[in-house]
Image 1 (cartoon, one colour):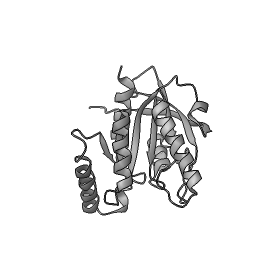
Image 2: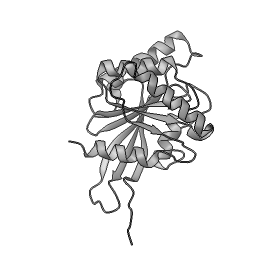
Image 3: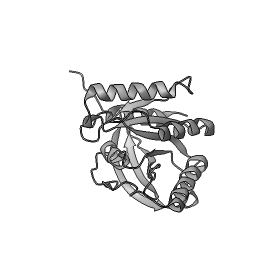
Image 4: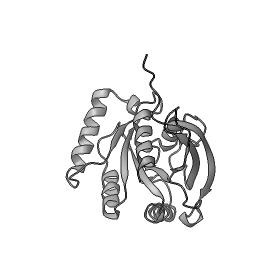
Length: 215
């Protein structure tokens, strides 16, 4: 009989701290994986699904609810046979592109996000979340192109795959890939996810483990 072990076993995940400035974030002594996207794209729900803790990150139906840099401490092991655990940070960043806030607040969020992305030295990968129910949005494409100019390692997670028919989701993903190909020769890693069905969980955890195992 063949026994199959999970790629990554999340032993513990807990909220650490929220900050309005990268300078106040925890010491950069562990690898860090951050999640960002347009407001209400499902960042908190995806984080909770990956960690298998429904109430870890606060979710809200109200766009723009996340306004700080939220750190979560995670302890994991490669699989059930591993003895030495990995300890790392998972970060929930404020959403971008939410119009129903003041211009001053929006500019403050944008500066906070840029400072974090460009100055956080232990950032191993940034997950850009894209709502799979929609055709490519200009703001997402522009944000991804900006990451390329900054040289930031990132992956794309298409969310809410269960909320639309599979054919429509595939068309939207294909359209997004084609839009990126206008500026990108090589596309980043991409994952199709659902916080409801847990689709994409194993694939992302495997990717995280690969990042943690990299020198």
